[in-house]
Length: 115
Length: 115
Image (cartoon, rainbow over all chains, first blue to last red; front, side):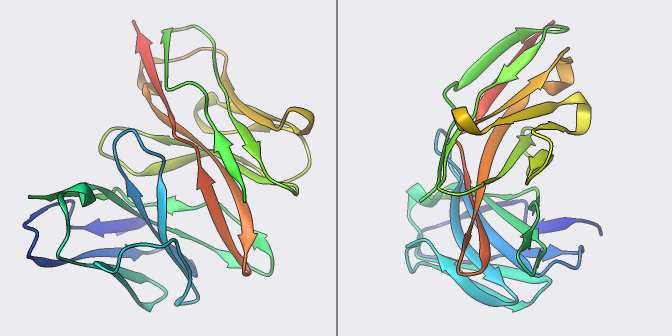
């Protein structure tokens, strides 16, 4: 595997289900991100992890719970979602080092549908 | 806080014609600027970036962008569009927050290419 991978690519779940999205980066980066991409809306940054510590949480509802067990893996745990949470969820990674910032590398996304 | 405006939701061009996609940003310091492209069902791919130095930046796939501080703009250009360029294009500005790089994306411009 190369780059940033996400599984599953598609997910359909009911509002009472619990599921998890997985992201893995094979680039040796030290920062990872979750984004939500809804139709006709700007890309919404949900969570940022730098060196496995959460540094940003843009007031995301608690039904979304991130987990970053190491610098290569990022999870998004989902429970009691709402239909409006249906969207494409994108994971990204980047390398941060001593004030030098670089571009993000994105995974292909997980298309989530909440029934 | 930083912000990005992409004033054109859709742009339609004929194959072989030139292209310019507009991006205006708001940020108090020298920004990190990016253009990404997203094909249907895929994640975002970096086209080019500006951090400092030469204000005309060359990217992949024949794209270029020019940073104009006086106009707070970072417009994307291509002299001759190919049908495969049809995609969604996102401008992004990066700012440092708590020692981490936090990007803000524009709403995107959808490029339609006519044969």
